[in-house]
Image 1 (cartoon, rainbow, N blue to C red):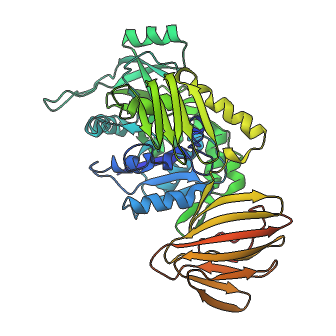
Image 2 (cartoon, rainbow, N blue to C red):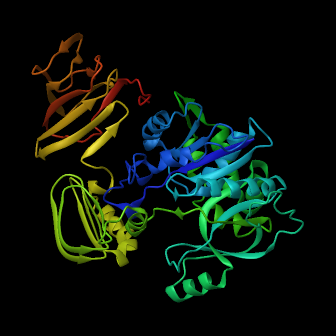
Image 3 (cartoon, helix red, strand yellow):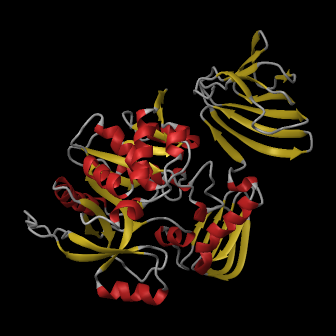
Length: 481
């Protein structure tokens, strides 16, 4: 059986400030009506003999992933949770160990959660070829036929056509599998042009297909430290609610390495299958501009904008009017708490900018003004020394944990819906325009018993207002140690 393995551990730093560590790009709706994660799920539909998918994601993203699985109508997925990021090789190894416990003959289709593919039918045809090749014991990757010289991608150099390959059994043209001659790092512009013109090089897609047992055999031989750490992490994993928590110490002991570096570059069993399917890794703002709907001036525009003499630019506004004059090939991204302005030729440097913000310990790297929780979301409206004002939304039927705070008191004002509030030993209902005060050190809980979202304003006051000043006693979402 074919088991799709979706890798969703990335933080998408090159798409800052829309993408943040707590809400990375794969969960954002960047174009259309679905997130990149949801479109990845959709392109699995129609694959023959395809079993339930297995998702590998960071622990802090588990509720985002679970909600998007629900919205996509996927109810039977397994969600493996990484305590820390360790790149694609450990993530895939844990998926392989987990699958082999149920199906020793399983094939793994490994897909990044944050890519764009326009021609799903072409992808499925290439995967059908890859499945036959993988069943013979090869480790298959899919190489994107380049459409231009590109310095932002790694490349795969093809070798000879696969020996004894029977070829297509239909009249429809099918891609030919090739041995892998070499994996090549991101080239300079001149080298990228040589690669593109030669016809022997493909962009590295990061998509793989292989038997779970064959991948683990290769990993044990070529990267034994990863194999051993992941074996322990899965053997000692802890199922809880709808998730499987990998054993933290074992997983963290694994080297941080990709499938390419740990296995594919070293094995003699690697095979590359050319893929022409309108692929884009959506790894930069220029990539998003390429895939966006451009107007007559070549602009991709979102939000409240006023433009004059602007062309070939991507401008995105979320919370206010953005005005621009006399720009060409620029990126402007506005959010409630940060604005990015860059020339399209320098968007690959956004990652360096985010590193500088992280060194400065800036919250804008981690979260947006709106922070999502399994019960809903909250937005910080104002903050100063000793007070903070939040707008809180609680989904119908949802409830926060039973908790207390050591350093702050809270005042809640209901502006929409009905709130059920636990305060100490008392439980009471609050309607719109009613309020309640929660003193420091008091156990409390907020619930939405209604059928519409509950909206309220929270005013916090105290000596410390950090989100880590929460002691949980009960939690519907398993966040109590």
